[in-house]
Structures are given as C-alpha cells and as structure tokens.
Length: 271
Ligand SMILES: Nc1ncnc2c1ncn2[C@@H]1O[C@H](COP(=O)(O)OP(=O)(O)OP(=O)(O)O)[C@@H](O)[C@H]1O
Ligand SMILES: [Mg+2]
Image 1 (tube, rainbow, N blue to C red):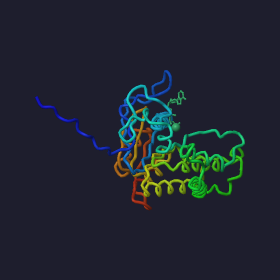
Image 2 (image 1 turned 45 degrees about the vertical axis):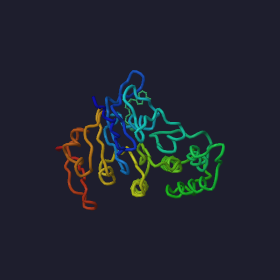
Image 3 (image 1 turned 180 degrees about the horizontal axis):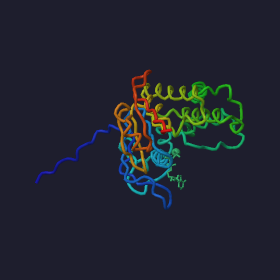
Image 4 (image 1 turned 180 degrees about the vertical axis):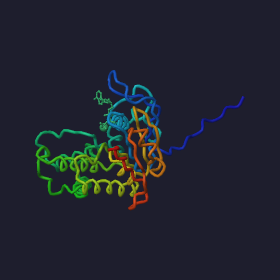
C-alpha cells in the first residue's frame, strides 16, 4: 500500500471564512457561509439592513467567534493567533464606536498604534509618522487637539477612519466608512481606499450606496438573509436581476458615463 503525501494547498486568500455559522446568543445570523477575500482586492459587501454584513465583518476580525466553521488568515485559524499579531494584520472600522470621554483626536488616532508597541518597542518616530499621515489623509490634522465627543458626525467618522489607518494593517475592514460624510468626503474616503488597494493592501468595506459600490469595488459580495447570494466583478454583479433579488427593488441598469461601470437607477413608481 502506498501513502500519498498530503498536498500542500497554496494560500490564495489571506482572509477567508469557511463554512461559518455565527450570530448572537440565540440568534443565528450567518449560516454556513463561505467567503474568500481576494488578496489585494477592494471588496465591497452590499445587502439590506440586518442581513448580517456587520456580523460577517466582526467574525472576520475575530470580535465574534463562529459557532461552527472557521475564519482563516494565511491558512491558520484566527482563533490560534496572538491578539497583537492579528491586530497588526487586520484592522476594523466598526459601524459605530464610542470614544472614551474627553479623548482628543490625536490621542484616539494614536491608539491605532498600540498593536505595534511592546516593552521593547516604545512609541517612536514610525508611530509619529503613521499618526501624522492618518490625520493628513483623512483631513483631520486641524482637529488633532479637539475632543472627539465635541465633533460633528462627519468629523468623528473621519477620526475613526484615521485611527484604523494609523494601525497600518495589510488588511482593512471598514463597516460603512462613508456614513455621516458629505459627498466630497465620501469620494475622498473611497478614493483613498482605491489608492491603498493599489499600493497592495486588501480592503473590505460595507457600503449602502450601490453605485459607489459598483464604481469603486474590484469585487462585489451581495448578501441576503445571512447568506452570500452573488459575488464577482462589478460588471457581472451589477445587474437589475441582482438588485431585485437582494433588495426587492425594480431598477434599470445603464452604463455609468464616467466609468463605463454599471449604474443602477431605481424605476419610478407608476403615478
Ligand atoms: N449585539 C447583538 N445582539 C443580538 N443581535 C444582534 C446584535 N447585533 C446585531 N444583531 C442582529 O443580527 C442581525 C444582523 O445584524 P447586522 O448588524 O449584522 O446587520 P447589517 O447587515 O450590518 O445591517 P445594517 O445595514 O443595518 O448595518 C440583525 O437581525 C440584528 O438585529
Ligand atoms: Mg451593519
């Protein structure tokens, strides 16, 4: 009898959920879900309220432990990774966060550097530079000395984004990064995501604006009722059929005159 060596599976995806069932106490939200985040992609998750988008991101960031199945980072179960190693690799911008009372913007953003520090490696020039850059690209430099709880909704959102950026992780998970932002700041944040992706990082964002999803994503994941019902390139996922399936909304899809990508236009209700 001959024995065959176990084949070594090449790791094509740094971050993947395999057959995960996850939720909260009695409520199962995700059911046997598989998702492989293409490395180097800007993946955008779309889907109706309460379908499980945030639950999925939290599971990918190990804030929720799946009841079954596992999340893998570079082929290893994330449950086995030391917290600091995980925090240096995967960053999460939660949908909502509460800042410690009275904390300044600069101090909050600096907290993004904690995973990079240790007894041997105290705060240094690298940390200073990372914070400065994060403040700069989010347009929060001039807010640095302000208290976070005294900011406008959009200013606060940009501060949280800055904190996630200061972490300088190769993988960044952003749960509705454009909430509270005006159109100019929305575009800035999405273009920043594209820039980071082009520099080699992997981004996963939840967005509610379908046209922004289709314009900026390299990979679209459509969810409904805790399941992934379609995924792929924006050109193949941005269809009227999918909008109807996912949201129950009748729409036309035309070509975005700016980008050539699909542009979703909801049909007008009959008068
Ligand atoms: N902490 C929690 N405890 C119990 N149930 C929760 C908790 N957080 C979310 N849920 C429930 O889990 C389901 C999925 O919620 P989730 O936040 O993942 O949805 P979502 O797709 O992100 O929605 P939205 O677009 O509104 O942000 C919902 O039914 C929600 O009520
Ligand atoms: Mg959510």
